[in-house]
Image 1: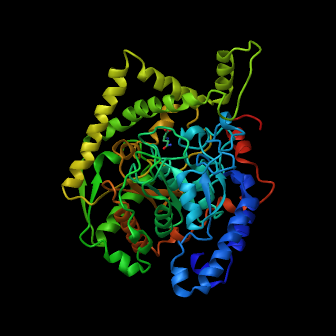
Image 2 (image 1 turned 60 degrees about the vertical axis):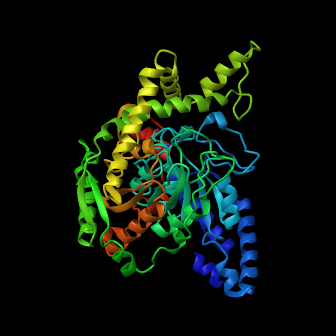
Image 3 (image 1 turned 30 degrees about the vertical axis):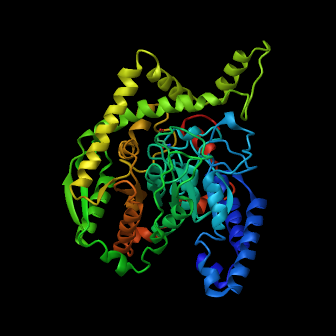
Length: 519
Ligand code: GLN
């Protein structure tokens, strides 16, 4: 798109119109979008076109000054503040709320000239692994409309996999970028904690949340990361670490990209090949590791012994922080608000929160409040923070020992049918076993498509030391290069054909049928 825009053979308005048409064609059956801002997108596209005309008049210099995302349509997970647009974070409690300001990353995207098309579905407050916990109904996986797209950023992943937009923004607190990227067969990157400002992003668990890109390929993901990364005074945890300009210079040539694998040391952490892992997933991930080795990487077995505690400690720390962050939804300051007949504030507060929050959010608030309460704080929260240090030390040891990156599955299984894990919260939590430790340690990690199992996408996860996003993206680009002729690379998500049929049921109707309930 960037090349066509620069050549003048397509306009940003045309690209925005194509995105809007693709959304109207298939989103009834997918439900990736919670809000589409057609007017705003077309106005931004026209502004991008005017800037392109001016840049073209200024010659090569002028065009070179434009960001690769200039004039390109994209979507945002519905927890990114965009002035004047709805921002629900997938929750009924935020229904009707329109932020009066832009998030830092929204400002950055506008500066880059990107065209914001709308807001994408997600599990309520980013709590979940399937997008079934959205207060506005589930999203379907473009590969199989009866299956989940993963979560919590299921909307962004499905919209990119469906070809609505080439790139989208998600957040990853425990895996919510990487896991849906894996389940939808696209690229997703969770940056190092502190790489991207959280200013204007609805908070889930503040010590774990990070914003990152979804894309069809590694270079697109790198361009989006480049646009949003960097220090912001309004988020004290955003780090003053320079954003490498080389993010925009990943090799286009497969030959050049593949050559970068020679001498790279990759570790296969044995604890990530968890019991209960689907055999097709394990086979695809091991085959990917073998291909990396055959292309010149040195692949060695490593052990990260505290991996098994990742799940338990995450489900103390994340709900604890969430219970504090969610205290602000009191029916006074944001969105949904209920009034009881008693006229007292506590009654209104209970009604608003009782009806505004969904079951999973209430479960997390209860877990978190319990873990933080006097008498339990030391036993649970403090203990979990200590184990968190041990999880981080495992990674530090591997990287200090000369490992450049770890190679692991992203998810132990492929996309599952609607409802399969809804009755069992622990089964839903367990699907994040391979992504959570990275968040506990604050590290960057990328998920890359690496093949199909039973016709559904499998994700390959690469984990690196802090601030190694460029290295991970280079590795990812190299993996793309050595697998560029694989048959699965050109497969289109088979659900898209029926998604375009207006008689196809919506995801909510499908989920109801699968749950044995009449829609
Ligand atoms: N699935 C995990 C959870 O429910 C992670 C979610 C996320 O990364 N936002 O907490």
